[in-house]
Length: 504
Image 1 (cartoon, rainbow, N blue to C red):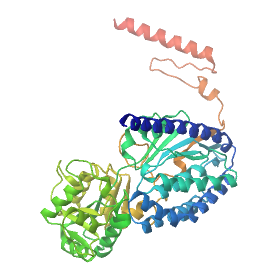
Image 2 (cartoon, rainbow, N blue to C red):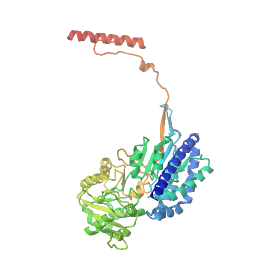
Image 3 (cartoon, one colour):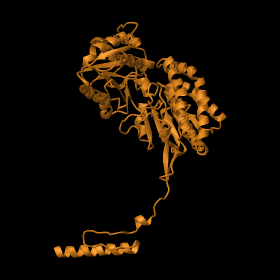
Image 4 (cartoon, helix red, strand yellow):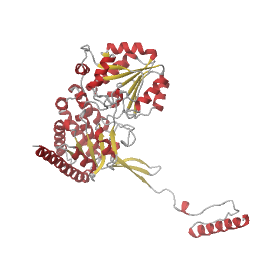
């Protein structure tokens, strides 16, 4: 019986690997056709795909929450419709392929060229919105894409992509331009990212494959580990700041990586901030309750329990074994120091906040620096302040991919409440884990071919013209050409030789 089980497991791996190879070969063939498409045709296809995805936005939100067990379907619906509405609007006037710009005065030209087949890894936490987004920006930039869904979101991802493949076929997208692994295994996913046809790897929120993707030898974009700090500075609109933080941390039950995980509060307004937190449903745990929560989340072991991710605060408290009011939105742990054994250093994809108080913005700045270099990998920092000088100091000095000002991190980072590019893959600055800290756009999926017309004669640079003096009394006049250059070199060498003999 054990042998039979093992054989089935191996067979599934082999099936997944073979499937990956077929998908990548088909995508490589599709690329040849897509290279002939002008931007206008790619735009038409992108719009058609977005409309098809929008029709399924609510159905897929419900299906995603049920299949994965993570988050709220209402918030997933917000993300799905955001990608289907805002992203196409932002893409509308963007040129990615063909002539991007031309300067008649300088006689230069920039041409956008698709990089090739994109191998994309999508997460269990936001499987639908991430897949829609990846497909739209890939097609917009003329690239085929093959997606490796998270095993926990296999069905909902398949439902989406089957519909998009059908819609793409109706408007001229070649077969193989969009694909996905139906048999999802680690072995099959690794085959995708290592396949010779893969020109770029995009990993959104699958940290367990970060090292393998980075070592694939392909340009690699990583939507890094998040849950960074938020600083509430003394000039902030406290009521609005707290509302933003609570709304962000509870959105989809804290499953979004960009959400705030640490609050750093200026001591001058700490009492006011705490009062507002309590009004908005924050529950400040005592030491015993905090210990129970840490045990529930398996934080001391260094590996959070994935079954606790994306669950409401009340459910977390019940599972941990303590009682909270029915109005509780987030669980808060008041901290004084950041230690090597800080259990809240790991990314917590649930509505839990660590809470620090600092005397002024300079001490808060240092605290945020310490928090950014832990597991959050410089993903996102938020500051609530009306002091532009403090905001600029944070912007200039923090080791972070994006800084958000006076806005909820979850919605601001993806470009909903800010004018950042609407994205579900947010790069971080982790060394060796990705080539960009951008909100990833179609421009990350192309390279620029630069064209320059000749504007000066080569003789201006290849000939020897004017007076040349090496400090040895030599100032010959030449008309240019290789013979004159040789004669000049010989004369210089002879002069140096004579001077050397004189010194000896």
